[in-house]
Length: 68
Ligand code: SF4
Image (tube, rainbow, N blue to C red; front, side, top):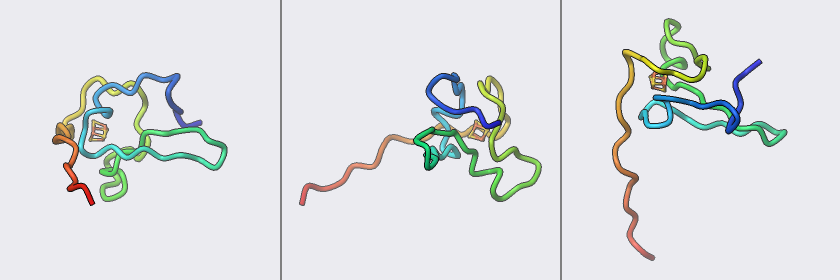
């Protein structure tokens, strides 16, 4: 069973550039690691909370968009 949110603390993934949040058809939210899509050595859905990860890269600030 996948660790759904927000009941499960996510840890490092919540501030990592490789995290992607997935919403299921039932409305549950999951933390997915995009490294796991490209590299079989990485779990697509890591066991939460992730406290240490050699692939961690802090996400940059949210992009600023111009007003229309
Ligand atoms: S690289 Fe590590 S910290 Fe980043 S999303 Fe994947 S598992 Fe989480």
